[in-house]
Image 1 (cartoon, helix red, strand yellow):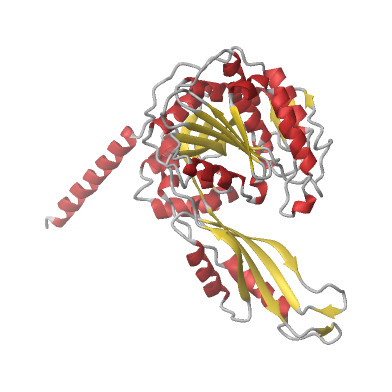
Image 2 (cartoon, rainbow, N blue to C red):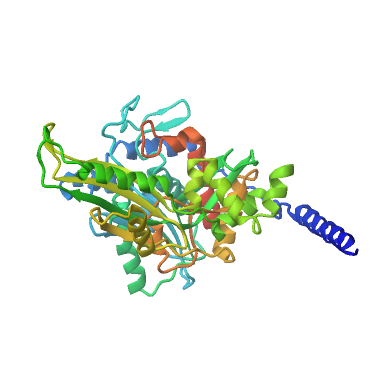
Length: 478
């Protein structure tokens, strides 16, 4: 007879606890003084970025396809455009053209490292509406390959450094500016820089590289701007699926031939995606952004931890970007069969571009591929791979400085941790620092994000200017 009252009491207590959790699930940050934009010329910065875009520093995995003269011209022009930077900072050229600048502070405090890269991806086969290397500055926009990824970031850093160097500023700790020449092809430039730091016994205080940005209307229930700061990167894995047959004339096809078996393997992988899981990094983003959501959304996000499986499923269905945050993804990017119309394929190949979720490894991913394919006649060839990066800390002075600089430039934005689904040079620096943050200080629209690695890449002059203000504020705050 006492069961019902006890059950009602338990339900009431649960409801009260839930209501208490939602009531406390509020934004915690307090306002910070705005950053000072004076002394930074937005139009001049845009013009300098345009000049650098006009130098086609396209990287390639094939050295024979790299225009070394263009990269040399870029390095020379960089020194001409930023004379105070090159007068005050020491410059080293690493390998085939990675750049490492050091701004001495006169102290032995661990340094701040600001990163970018000046190589860009090809434009072949893309439907640009203007010359992709025009560097045109028109109607408040800078157009061309590299405007955002990643010459825009490099220019924002150098505009800040140039302004401070010209004014005689000395940073409170050493500042290194690194720019890679082969980031887009997973090259060695950043690895060489990390070797330099190791040889000299230097552990960075904080590292800031490309990654998240200030975006709007991308998080469910939060209509405002969110500045997502990447704490980690997914792993990388390149795999070829290969099937073989004796071949022969196409007039006498082989049942269940090499292309058919390859197709079946691809379809099996497509039908059995990796499981969706809400990692702590993504949970942190939900926690930070969810505090700014209205009504029912906020009530849901307030209970994100106990509802992890439900939220992971919801995010996996929300958009392809959200799906990439919660699971290992497999993209088929190349297909190859016979070289002639009337000849049976002796070999069929599919290339898989795989991004490995946090908590998984190259080994566990390959094992699952083989298990899902379930066909020993399909060879799984691992071409290259790396496990996910370590997760950077958020309880450091470095993260606090980055967060404060974001809020000083974008006071309306929510600052949230983020999992970067692409690869960057920052993953190498994560080997020597637990404070590696992936953030481009630009407010980017959906159209600008979609143009990365695609046609009509561009950045607004205003966003470029705000990026320079961010980096100058960060350096001053040291």
